Image 1 (cartoon, rainbow, N blue to C red):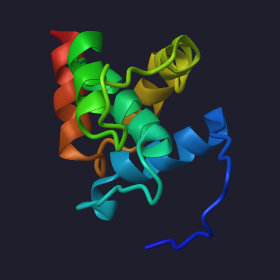
Image 2 (cartoon, helix red, strand yellow):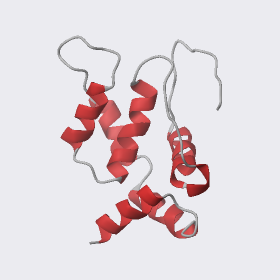
Image 3 (cartoon, rainbow, N blue to C red):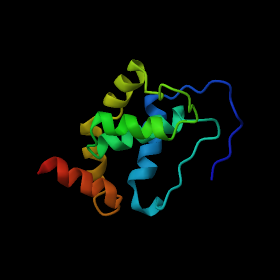
Length: 120
């Protein structure tokens, strides 16, 4: 558990996403409960990146993002084009594979399954 002060604006950097993913991709840290104090954006972006690594289709991942958003008014919230571009490039697939290779003995089962699906 890492308590934080509620901020008006959070800037999610590629390095921050990579650090969170390293925690999620390591079996020794599981189970993990990821939540947001304020809505969906920061947590939603992390979830979108995990779903990309798991090879979810973009429409399915975006539907999940909308379903768990605190913004419940129509139309359902969708990630912005800027968020989608960020999610599609951070971290790179090569970085994920390199992490998995370096931590083959301790990678999370979900990561191993995702990488097996990508190879097949």
